[in-house]
Image 1 (cartoon, rainbow, N blue to C red):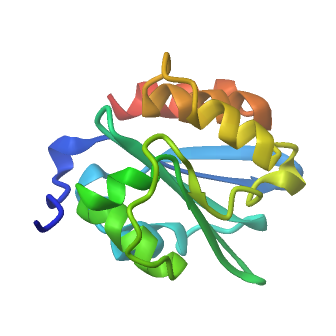
Image 2 (image 1 turned 30 degrees about the vertical axis):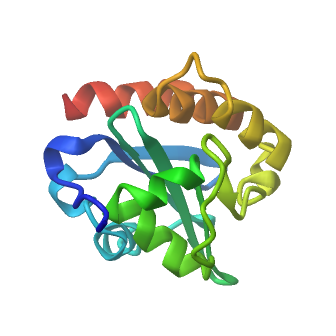
Length: 162
């Protein structure tokens, strides 16, 4: 069975975040450009950033993906590996990660879980947030933003996008 194509209506959150001159900058991305990994990457590449630029997309109640583009290359993670079976964006992320076709465990994050460690969010933090079944993917991203120290900027960008 083919994965369901992500539409703009499926995208709850689409953000770019990066540090510039020691300060966090957060901006909403258009949902229509965040339905494919290539669209997310194209949007992320338009921004500067010390240590790279991160893009985050939450799809409904299902999953989120974070990608980081930096001089040292691309890093990405997916909050729920099982989403690769159901959603095109998650499947594209898995292909970029070079993951095999083994059926992943539900609620198990996959990919480079340490992609935000140099900003103070460890792989263990990411796993704990992803496995918190009381949080929806958009709330999980807000929790990550809080740990990064950019919760206010994150919320302002979310409010501006609505």
